[in-house]
Length: 632
Ligand SMILES: *[C@@H]1O[C@H](CO)[C@@H](O)[C@H](O)[C@H]1NC(C)=O
Ligand SMILES: *[C@@H]1O[C@H](CO)[C@@H](O)[C@H](O)[C@H]1NC(C)=O
Ligand SMILES: *[C@@H]1O[C@H](CO)[C@@H](O)[C@H](O)[C@H]1NC(C)=O
Ligand SMILES: *[C@@H]1O[C@H](CO)[C@@H](O)[C@H](O)[C@H]1NC(C)=O
Ligand SMILES: *[C@@H]1O[C@H](CO)[C@@H](O)[C@H](O)[C@H]1NC(C)=O
Ligand SMILES: *[C@@H]1O[C@H](CO)[C@@H](O)[C@H](O)[C@H]1NC(C)=O
Ligand SMILES: *[C@@H]1O[C@H](CO)[C@@H](O)[C@H](O)[C@H]1NC(C)=O
Image (cartoon, rainbow, N blue to C red):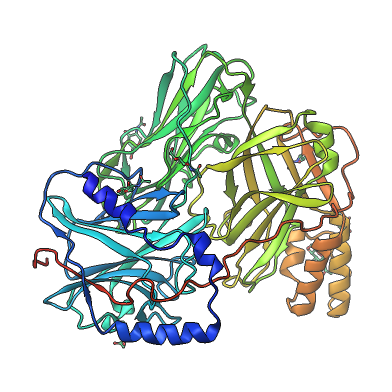
């Protein structure tokens, strides 16, 4: 794009800086008056002719790009300016009929969503900032924070360029944070006389998850002897079903010596951009001597059991993620003695249209060096042990389970100068909705390591942290997961099965230590006391629990507010069993059973924008868009 459009993006930043905005807090009454005024202004359309017939290919200012729909008709690109606190979006609409809807909502619903709508009444096209209420009814926003910069017809389709401040202080707008964002989209196949006439239940629509606010990472210098290795699917045919996890075993070359992985990037087969959802490369456990060369779906009955021992993450990519760079001083070791030569590629295909016969050879390209960097990077598991003693009652909307990495363990296992966490991958199974890890020092929470308030088990990527977090011996790391079990009839217990739950944060850090796993679970003895109490209270104690499994015991609890609240309190107060482990089967020496819960004060204040901007800074009316009169 020309400098003209560049200046467009900056020039239209006349809105006061957010600092300025926060300083002016209108009282509620004033806001009401102002919004009435805005509604009146809305009657007069501000004519914004943003048509440019130019067909010169735009210079790309957008580092991030994702297809929104499974066919890739809508393609979103965006960039972020942290200094101007603005996101610029470019929506490429390859087949335009009478308009499109794009926006964000809590978990991808079309109600309570923050939207921009391009619609046509059959004669003119309009662009506006809108929102939907709890019933999905669309309304024009009295504060127009999305600003159309350009609508341009190109050979590839219609390009819509628009921007919004990262934080708008408009309660009708989605608060964009640096976690997962559920983008929503819809197609308008007919003209609508007004915005309000659009029936969101009746249109073709969908959602796509991305991390919009990526941290500002500069590309580190790479070693001169950089080599690469492609771990890709062997020209498979994507099954014609919505969800497929493909598993493929690849072997490292013979006598492959110790190397450092310093970066990796996705390889996506052309045309399959909307189908390849996420990919991971795992290394198998060194103890497993021979892993069969499997090539098939991960849930196949033919899948050899040995593949379950391939869980050490080497690389992970999810839709929208950029190449991953290790910090210049560290690399992820692989190869050499004590390291398995078997790698397992796992590709998640999302094929909701159940397309048939699509070939795919997607995967990851690992870049590595034999010039080992000063530090080995390591991966540590935080959170909860996979055990049924940690359970979520049924019909819960936001039940929280917490796992600890105690001061006793960090004192024993971490070097004096501490470790530096630079990336994190959160993990739960199907009922996980939020995950957070905080760091506590001397009894106070001092830092958030990673947080996702819109976490989805269908969108797990390794995320670079905005800021490296240093953990010193004696610090405590607390990982909490929030679950929604509204659709479950029985308690959901912890475990490996996809219908059971996990609460994990894989932290990527350096220098590597022997501590591979720092997790906890409630003491099982206290849990038995819970069952006794609940069953005697509910008069169902037949004294025969000693031989049934914890899972069965949970299954026989009759859930009511009492049994639920007592379980919650148990998890909040009962001692824990600490797993301060070197590798999955070796504990650090020490007493780890019946450990007291760390006593932590919340020392962090939540910074949430509370203020309103003055409504009417931008005209509360849709912009008339000239897209060369043609639709369809
Ligand atoms: C974002 O893209 C717009 C439009 O191409 C461009 O004018 C602007 O300079 C870009 N901003 C950044 C931070 O890259
Ligand atoms: C909106 O569309 C849905 C689904 O087609 C339909 O059931 C509903 O009656 C429509 N609502 C209105 C107000 O037309
Ligand atoms: C992000 O990077 C840009 C250019 O690389 C720089 O100008 C800007 O100050 C950085 N912002 C932050 C918040 O680090
Ligand atoms: C892997 O399986 C696919 C089936 O989709 C097959 O077409 C392909 O040839 C197989 N490749 C190897 C290397 O086994
Ligand atoms: C529990 O199992 C053991 C052996 O498996 C058996 O001897 C014992 O009687 C059982 N207890 C109950 C209460 O069923
Ligand atoms: C006691 O529990 C065991 C194991 O769940 C079960 O097989 C057995 O039938 C139970 N006995 C009685 C008397 O309920
Ligand atoms: C930690 O090590 C102990 C053995 O020392 C083992 O029993 C336990 O299962 C390990 N914990 C995990 C979560 O793997």
